Length: 103
Image (cartoon, helix red, strand yellow):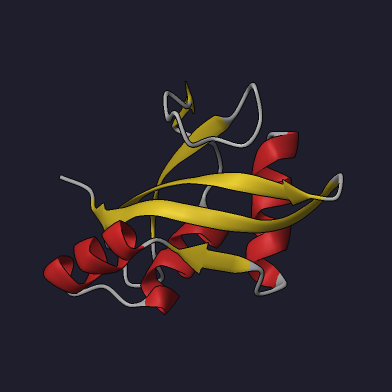
């Protein structure tokens, strides 16, 4: 398991995660709960893909988005995309940009 995935899982386990409005809308449209998404992140064995952010609003010169595809405890495959956020030089939380059923 990658160091980044371990760091993501630790922030989620500590309850330090936030959903964007887009992620919440996708979850609602797919009938997913926060628990479904967090279970899938905690069940992940690998990061599916890493993307360099193209957003003009990013805070850092290099910002990476991590795509995770994994099942929740009911076996439903969930796609989530997020980033680790650093404040004052320390990782503070995982920000979920997208969360939906994987098709």
